[in-house]
Amino acid sequence: MSKNGSISNSVIKRLPRYYRFLGELKKQGVERISSRELSQRMKLTASQIRQDLNCFGGFGQQGYGYHVDELRDEIGKILGVDREFGTILIGAGNLGRAIARHINFDTRGCKLIGIFDVDDQLVGRQVGDLQIRHTDDIPEFCAENHPLAAVLCIPKEATQKIADTLVVMGIKAFWNFSHYDLSIGYDDIIVENVHLGDSLLTLTYGLNVLTSGDGEEDDDYVEE
Ligand code: NAI
Image (cartoon, rainbow, N blue to C red; front, side):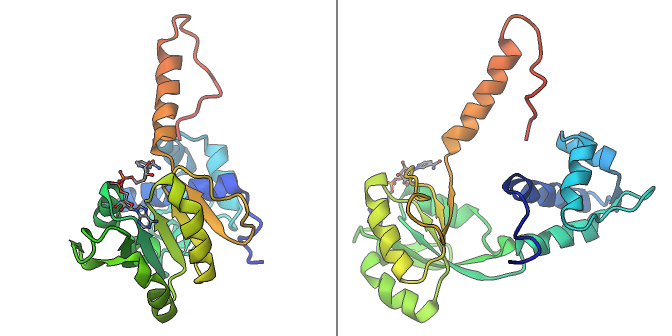
């Protein structure tokens, strides 16, 4: 197992957010930042930040804080943003096309190399640089291009079957939007289930706390 293999999931989940914040600081021309300042901007405690970053050997220096560019590069390496994992997208409907157009895969270690759908009306249509292909072409495409990741933007009912097929074709990771819990049954496959509605519910919870008459704040609620 790699040296990052034993890091807790909650720390791993925070890394993209550190990476994004540090990228914004870099754009603003900030060269270094203390854990206190970073904590204020990120709404995490300074000790949480120190603890998180210590998991990777601690990038900060006493009295200096963190070097923004270096820390961002290190976190980027841990995340693997410099890699080019071949990625295919299944389901070129409204969501699939929006993701293909608006998510920058290249800066996140993945390269979108194919888009597939069952609908003949969609096959041949251009989405960004790619032409939608028929799902019948998936086996040949995978044999030739060896993608490792798949984005699933298909109806719930179709998800298990297509995932099973894709695992046989060598897919190791699913970015799954289909509202079907794919983690069941695959021990060696990485699944990131995305539910935008859950994020909205977190907002609702925040609003609920904010507007719940007694005026007392919930100390456990930390904006992530
Ligand atoms: P849509 O109906 O516009 O697109 C679905 C596409 O999947 C269609 O083009 C259809 O031809 C294709 N498809 C169906 N079965 C397929 C198969 N076996 N192989 C390949 N392609 C297949 O729907 P939309 O709005 O794009 O949503 C897609 C899915 O994402 C739905 O399940 C929806 O519930 C879910 N969704 C999830 C969100 C989330 O936060 N996780 C947010 C929005 C939608």
